[in-house]
Length: 245
Image (tube, rainbow, N blue to C red):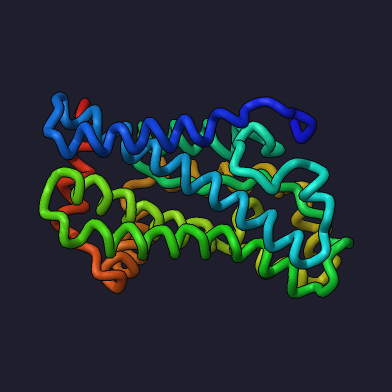
């Protein structure tokens, strides 16, 4: 996957399509729900790319030059190790279930990093990017008492929820990556066979157990409030996003 050279058109196309959806919303084009859906989904893909780019950029700063050789220092999602896990599955989960699954596809070589704590910074860079995006979107959207403001507010809320979700100390999430450099080798070896399955278990619980995801959305909403977000607008945006419901 890292050897792919194509796909440089993907990110600018998504940006253009997202901007076009925003313009359509502002002009009152119908059906408005479809345009809100496209804006939120497009905005989500943009922040997924920024999330992965942040991982790679911090890894490079820490001394892992392999991220440059693998082509990660780009916003082109076709360069990611696992496009399905990093882009396709998050889009499907967001569209179908409203769960903002963050991506996780940048392959880093910890042995190349100058200090052990750089590995923690690499993992933290992704959710930090979501938090920054959430704050910026919330600030921009709050005074826009319109459909566009509702769509941007919902997108902002999703960023905070994604950050909280991704900070879970479970293998496969950045929260575990932050802690992993300091865990005993024996514990890491014991966890290794379970690593592919633990994230699936988390999502199965969030998806199927009533109320299991409430605390994650509650924590994300509190961060949204701290950023000055408008809950009412975000609620309207959420409803418009699920235009088929």
